[in-house]
Amino acid sequence: MIHLDYILIISAVMMFAGIFGFLTRRSTLAILLSIELMLNATDINFAVFNRMLYPEGYEGYFFALFSIAISAAESAIAIAIMINIYRMLKNISVDELQKMKW
Image (cartoon, rainbow, N blue to C red):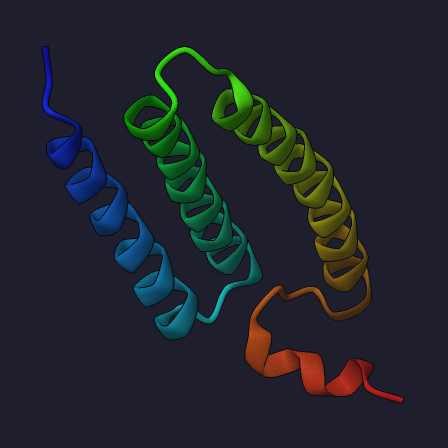
């Protein structure tokens, strides 16, 4: 059996990797992947804390499932926005998005 501390360490590494990728990348697709990595780290935390605090309950798993559904919807909307940006600018770099402001 894997100790829950190890899973929390993996989740923390995933969260910091997502934060680092969000702050350093210039491509909107890389930023989206970084956000998804952070959301997956929170899903792992939901499951681990549910197992630690309420071993017989399923609330943490339901929160993780709900968060995964929201992440899928967020990804679909973000990809649609990226497709529109690419059609207008022929580039998906964050630096070029100044042209789309009002």
